[in-house]
Length: 217
Image (cartoon, rainbow, N blue to C red; front, top):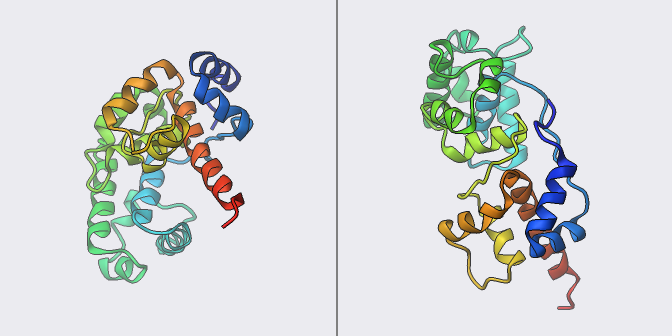
């Protein structure tokens, strides 16, 4: 997968429109977001559901176990999931809620609610959110991450993301976390590249932590 926009043009646009953001961009360095390897929407959402509320390592371990249950197939499919017993999936580390969610994901993929990757690329952001959040356990934030990191869409602003909100607080010198309305209003100046602005908010958190670690105790 590749980005659906020109990252150089995006960075130049943001630097012109937002002085404070431009300072963070200079400190953080080049924009390096690279979309993840192209997978089916089913695979991407399966990984997302399995990994909810887990550390990266634990999520990868359990996801690997779930995929291994599909052997000898190398990739999970909804058809194969239907052939797996609940006990085997639970033994792989899935909670009852996650098991119910991936069963629903498989069914909604087979009935067309979750479209193919080719179809997904033709839909606008709002339509993708509307379609995919019909799956149990898949919220707006999960779909926003897919839009940014799998489909490479340019104008995603994950308002509920803690890192984006923290980065905004640090970037603009706020004493408290911004409200959703304040963040959304300010980010209007980032359009049509709010994905890039959001990415730099995550970098702002990293810069803040690095600066704190440098300070003498």
